[in-house]
Image 1 (cartoon, rainbow over the protein chains, first blue to last red):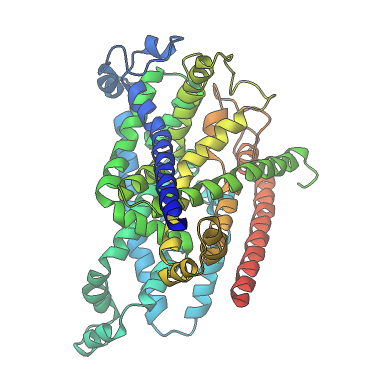
Image 2: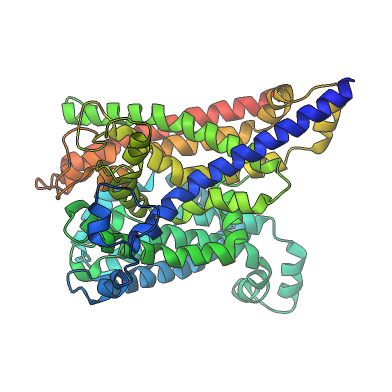
Length: 283
Length: 241
């Protein structure tokens, strides 16, 4: 009798759980739906007092208008964002990868001191250092340059920390075999270690790319001139100044998230791994 | 610096924000992780849906929240929903009192962050040994009791890490405040968390780097103290296990 009841009960809770999931999932999709809908609405329909589930008229000229409108540096800011995200991702992988490997494997008197110094900077939130960093970058004359946007983000303590922890767990026997074959640290790293760490490198890479593409405070502070705007800054400028058509702004936002949504579709397992690793630190 | 009322107000704003955002994000992402972990049908679909907002930037979320959901006009989604129930429209962002803008800011961050922390909780849940659940089932425990006495204690390390990250991230909040509350190029005098305060002090018209840097040092100290205390608690907890 008790078993029968618990079976029925578990079926009810199963359905309740499923219903809660579907409801929550729909709620989470609403902002995406609103973004796409508004991007294809006419300006007058967006401003009308009635809520439209679908655009009364699909306005595709928002997309072409976006790239024709000289007031919106859309193409340029997309190019800037792409350049910054790609160089920063490649740079972080190379710099932090090499640093992490060196800290994990090369016996050196100061390696622990260096490692603890790097780890200690993790306690300082990056955003808090933005005023001193800004002063430094402006002294170098790098305001409104790609250099000023890219270079300060090239060394990341968290990525270095994670690479070191990962390489500590890399099977040493493989590296020793490479050493016997005459490869130094440099050769072993590039020919043996990197090709066998693809999943980890991809995880750190995808997370770095997303962070770089979506970065806001630093590009806002450094990207003063329109030519150095990233796509986030372009969007934010028009959003906070409310100086362009709202429907076109939604279209611009849609264009800005499409690259990342595509990344999510194809690289999700690596992104998930990256989140798990960066979230829990050296777990 | 500490006698500056604007600076102290920014700390109060942070505390109010943290009181809203930390527990809600924690509970909702843990709940989502538990639901997703126990679903066999379309598990990866649901995981992706909750995780997808992580791809969006705060600027994009601010745009949707400010111009569409909480736009304040009748056709904004929130007011449209209120309208279906016969309620009046609410000017979500243009009033300081009542502070409806908190709802806008908190829900925007919630949407962006829940997926990230859900992934962390999912990873933690998957590391729990199934034998613990089998033993609990033999002892006749189910539902809430299993959660209370097995899942929650086993997730202690994950929970501590999530709480710490939530707190640090709330402390660093800037993007959504700036993009949602700033209109026509000006930011209201209220609702300025520490980084917004610093931004306008150091980089606003005053360009007061000295004040800005002093503020940054104080903020760093606060964060470091919180992190050390949290780390202590975590380590003590581990020793007790």
